[in-house]
Image (cartoon, rainbow, N blue to C red; front, side, top):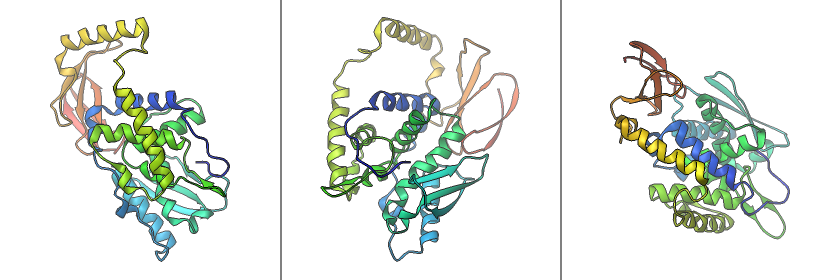
Length: 299
């Protein structure tokens, strides 16, 4: 995560942001995303100046890990002088080392924002979801953190006046506002009541206006002829296999056709609700890539 320097405004990464939201739905499923209907509460990540620095940082880290449903992930947080705001070492786990910039020793209320981004790196790493290139991958991380309920902290860390400015994350303030607005329109949640930064409130308002304009656009306008044909084909394909779209995260097995292999069975992990797809081949033993729960079932 980068900080310092002039703050970029507008929507220069909007195409990548929209692709990131689409990638989340494809990887997690609609049912799993619906389980993130409640954002991180401000009280859970509050950090007072009288709190012990390291104990408080680890408490906030545990709260964000809990929100992302990473039950066996443990974060070790330390502080050092560095150029970036934060850095995390991605390993096989369950222990991950996070380094925070020394400036957070005196800017403690922004520690939750930095950790929201870094813990999302762990979440996406376990999912096996990434974009090519560092820039696009960081945009994916910011978008996922925001859409899944912790990224409002990143927008609230944005402050700007005539003498100085501060912003965490790789999205512009308006892009953070746009993703937050998309989430708000989905869950009926108003994050504006949590902002302590007036600039964050203004950026959210601009993002909300763009998100509402999106809803007024007819579907598939940007898909082109080939995209519309593919959509029509997929709709016909889904009608032939009505079990491909279960209505709840706890729905029974759904059998889905695979053009590149055998029929697969899809079901929700009982711990984190992520959809798991495995080939139909009798009794199988599978491990959830996100929460590491081991599952055994007959297919």
